[in-house]
Length: 415
Image 1: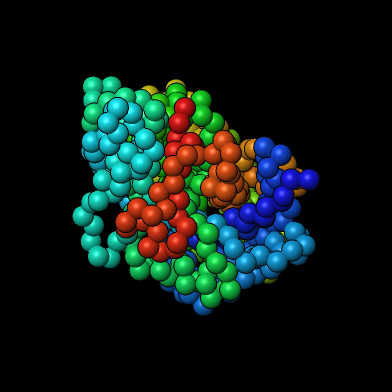
Image 2: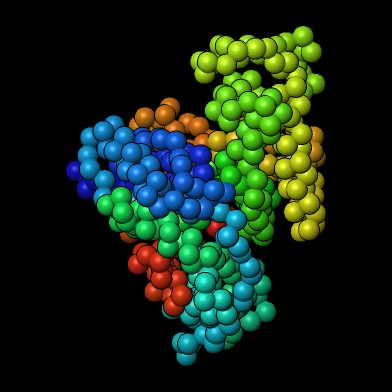
């Protein structure tokens, strides 16, 4: 029997901490989900830790829940990192092909990527990922994998994703204080895209919209490459705040109203329909016109989507992504969001669900679990020996300073 491997993904979000445990075997192409943990998150703001003790406690609770359902202990995991401190930029690296016969080796490709990562960054920031988008070999452009080809000058176009060192250290400290070891620290949107986007969508051109509690992360793919990434410092928790202000109600009540009665399309709500607050179980009474709540939700969502549209306009992709928009994250479940997205962005839109799974799939068949499942798939890619990515950049200077095993993979970004 093939050896089994356990992989755990920990998604540390602003409003919720999710843990997914999977079992994999070399003779199986898909991971088997065996454990789930989900607890409310406190101590984070817009994806960034501001209370280490509280976040560490929440992580422990999520892990313990996952351990109970999986029936085994967890001590190592892949962890997501998000927040508005994360930025991306394009960098190029150039090297001479080393072999006398001009054939490009894996070492040549790695040296080119290493050169691309040798950029000047402030002392309070560090590199999380170096993602090779394409190579140029002499006059041959847009090469996905140059190994084995012949030439003299090899250049790589790479996307550098970096974050603020204090926030990275705060997160890793939370995980460490929960008694856990980090196998990889992965930008949350990249992990989620691994779980919900097909290679065809990435090739055609698609916008992945991660609708979290504290931020909305947008990632644009085209011809298999990431061409743009941006984080908006606003999310579904801001909708809750808007409802609380609009109804002059406690934040807990506003959250319940949002989850049970919120919708992105006020035009579909009858002016005669009321929300009976006494039925929400929070000792509040009174009737609230549901259309009033819908107008509050729609106004904030419209504002967010307009900001997304401005980002698309910056890269000349406004209304020009054939595969449209794929929405995921906890905020993706707001009724009517898909239709409002189509209206504002003038693009096809759909909800993204995790794929490539077996086991208790129904428990993670949820756009809110996209990042946690994506961490499992990234971990699986990292651990594959046969047929997996050939190049690992664990040892590139400046990468892996936060943990020893941060890896970046070619394979997921090839068409």
